[in-house]
Length: 160
Image (cartoon, rainbow, N blue to C red):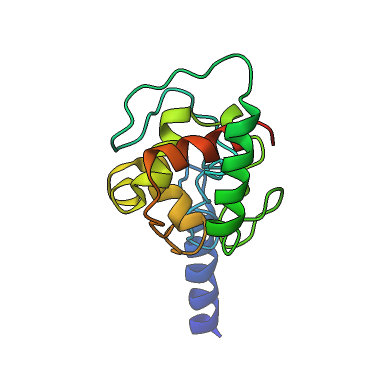
């Protein structure tokens, strides 16, 4: 009986010590796991607005006329429909992002460099890298467009 009382006394003391308070802030929960750290929610690349990034490629500066060139739009639409619709839909995500409203989020230089220089863009441009990851690693194919064709596609994008 005395052994049982001693054993119970030891258990009560051990429990009291282990449950005792401390002036230190506990970093672990009662189960020994750390509380999850608060992290900022990362904005997907397709929703990010980056109007200072010009990308990596041959286009370093472009000036867009205030008035949209309808002949260039027609050419751009033709090129887009022929070369881009396998992966891009005008107003919804597909294999690649939709071009509608792209110039509200990206510079004209970035758009043209992505069209003309996609391999280097996904290697060196942080936004292009993030887009590649967002679209499951499906890189944009280089369609071999000329700067003139890329400029026409850009003009078409201005109408979307």
